[in-house]
Length: 302
Ligand SMILES: O=C(O)CCC(=O)C(=O)O
Image (cartoon, rainbow, N blue to C red):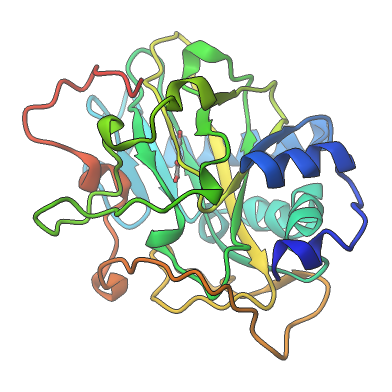
């Protein structure tokens, strides 16, 4: 569904002002919609998963590990597709106010696409270079968006999500380098002049939702604090927005309608989208592509 049509529907859970901000800036924080009960259950599920990762010593289809990960010192970058690995994560994605918030910005008919649980471990949790999301998973329109949930308080020191406001309306950057390698990265020198003044830091207390338009340029810095930053990310779209490449993070829940009805006609945005590599052979996760030989891992993204 295109934005003009979405905006004809009143919001159910977000204030109209925050929704307007999301459409104008491409990102927003929504507070006080996820209660302590959800947080307690999600953290318990997360703790089970972290415990299970102690037995894992190499990246696999489930875990992406940070340097230094071991049985006594779990350090994770990502749990890939949490909805696949614990029923609480699917219950949250499909039955919590997160899906209602998605309906406020995608329109009343909402489809689930995929999920990930990104960590930044204390004292060195990885950075995430500037990028657009949608070229990794193009759809027939740009309604796909991410609803992130901070499972712990997240302040400036912990590497909160950062977005460049308004960049979702600007031209899309290529996610390939000049040699044709997929990098999912925009070099700072290629960003539009004055970008530093348009960076918004999407911090929030535990339970805050962070909304990201799939075109908006975003990233995050390293976590040099002594607190972990777990961020649960669920991607939704309007029901009538159709993916046209292989889902990099497939699950049995891909395409499930979580609010409203399935579509009979597809929605099309005339603006085309760069295509990713063919993910049918598997997807290694963004850090593998963003990694540069010899780069100082401590180099900030800003
Ligand atoms: O975890 C983060 O800080 C960034 C996540 C992100 O940008 C993504 O998964 O596309």
